[in-house]
Image 1 (tube, helix red, strand yellow):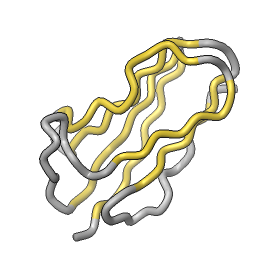
Image 2 (spheres, helix red, strand yellow):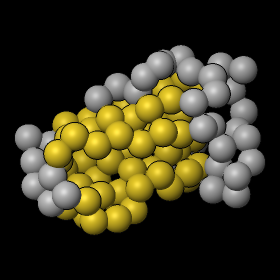
Image 3 (spheres, one colour):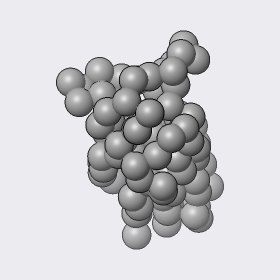
Image 4 (tube, helix red, strand yellow):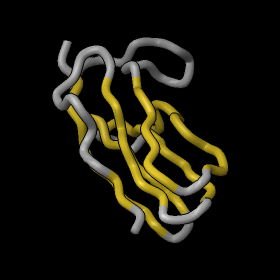
Length: 91
């Protein structure tokens, strides 16, 4: 099955790891959003083979600028699977 786990550590500063599982080769999109739904960072946007995967987020936006402390959401889309979870950045 597809699976998205809670980021670790959470709360975090300055880096957290997002882990997920793909039961088959899929196009994967992992994106971080702020609480208003604005895209903060595109972490993964590529075809990936099946298996356990992880990606780190260093609390920066797509321009490489540090983001403020607060609550963020991360969402995975892979095939027909969509899931999201929240994480907390402490400064």
